[in-house]
View 1 (cartoon, rainbow, N blue to C red):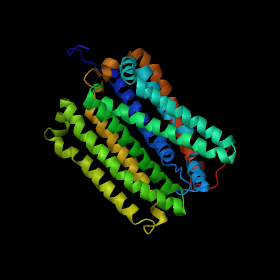
View 2: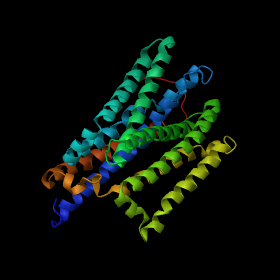
View 3: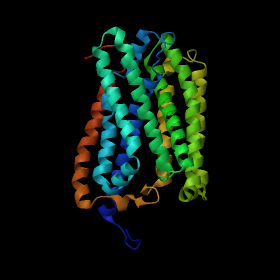
View 4: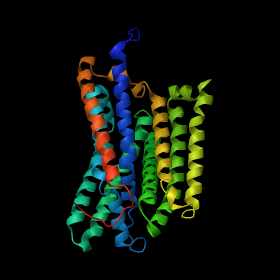
Length: 343
């Protein structure tokens, strides 16, 4: 797109609306599928670390939700494919291998969950291993994709090392929100163990956020100007300050758990959601209006307005429907996880 072309009306706003919807879908996916991926990674395999009933309770806590949570990933990728076809080709072309690993991980999880329900009790641990492995592959590959995106899809020793480290830190973030989910959904020994998991993973997650916050402006000069220019620097300080406050409050609650009381057991999960939200907003602010860093803006990558308008009308129907049935499912199955049941 030449610089002398000025976009107005729907030509300007439709790509912005669609990138907003895509970002919202990725965020909701990261929160909802994030906690059940985290629970899958945390699933203890050692009989001394957790009893069979405790592993069943962990699976029961995500059982009614995990499959539907992936709907948001399908929606986000679908919006990328339809609304930004040229960006889709570039991004998925660069991320072909980690995307393939992600799909493999999700397939393993689905197979393991179904076969776990039908296998004899002595074979359940085998499928628990498959579920855990699928969760680890899915989370690690997502972290690698984020790392490669931040460094502009460069493939050298440093960028690959950063992407691999990003995979570890994103996995820790999912473990943190998964442990926070277990604090909210379970009781007794398992709940206390989840509180300890959440404390550990909180600080690994913060390490990952700090790492990305350092590498992102270092690798992208435009991002450095956005964050450290005057006067926005003083306004944007609210983001790291908010992360610090939320982390301290969450740590203090978890450190004294269960003396802090069952009444506030939702607090770590709420803290994790806000941390995820601030991270997504920070990443979005860093790169907007680019959808492919340094290569394509949202307007360059967007499909023609004549195609986006009917797609937008469909999204007006589809997105609220998904939100409604998601909210309804969580309302129906709210409360503590109890005996594992398959329907």
